[in-house]
Length: 470
Image (cartoon, rainbow, N blue to C red; front, side, top):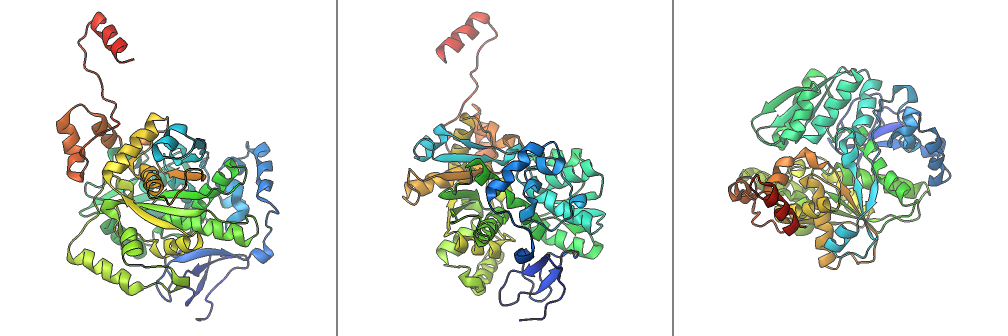
């Protein structure tokens, strides 16, 4: 065990690898351990911090929701992420996101009515779950006096960072995107909010590599999910789920994979709540990859890689990445938000899977778009990556892993208008447009398409058409 390097009294950063355990002060900006290069956690001295006697204690804050910190769906739970003084917190009202039961989606998956719920993170200010983490990372950036903040992004992170920079006027946003790997819906946000946007040749993994190098050289604060403060904010998605369920624990949480920040933060949230005696059990966790970006599935299910109490088989991981490099293999899926081959939070995710008795699956773009269409037909539009959770729940139900009477929460990570191109192509009556956008990704049918009806500009013809289609 190396010597402890620096540490505050109540909160500090700590290497996730038990064999290392090096710690650092929260006043430092770090995205990895200086000793071994691993990821960092934010850790609290719970023995000396005030801890709620019950999660129900948070309900009293609703009567004070005219106050910005109590209105925030992240910071009203700040006793469970106590790294920042109140006067340094930056909030724009993030986290006002609902948990919706959906009879129609439950039927599509094969669940009993009332047993399937959708946590709709698309209702955040920038339209995705990223705001939960960005408010926490941005708050830490403010605490340490950062003047610029950067990220690599497939779209949602850049939109969120640009929004916080624009609204607070505290720092400049610098955004790295890959060539052709970002939807216009998301890119329009970053541009409109005033971010400096740098497009490089390559994909998200290339952009992530470069932004880490540039941030280190220029001293720019990095807000990607390698930032441990980001994941502290994302923990609160689970707190809001529990709040909506009157603090009852669901049987399953189903979440899209991608960079594995959400799954990692969810595991940390439940581990901490159980340790503090605020819950008596943890739900099972299902992480759903797109088949075109299935690193976690390949490592976990095909090669048997596990957290193993903090001693994962890193040789298998390195071997898999070497194979990707040798074959010049790139992630490729219509679900652009999870089009990632090298998830930076892999180790934390493996830990979460161990904590939550988790499972991993992948689903095709066809399954994702069909699930997306059923979600939208039942009143909640989401981007393709979000629908991976619903497609994955359906697959697990078909495999008998999930029982029809269990309580299942699927996380919808982003709003429908984040990626309208895929939506319009799926429902299009123009076969050429369908093939152009979706055909190259193995999508051959649109079983749930809602196509526009062509009709001449004549009143009687329009009336007849409406009557025939009603």
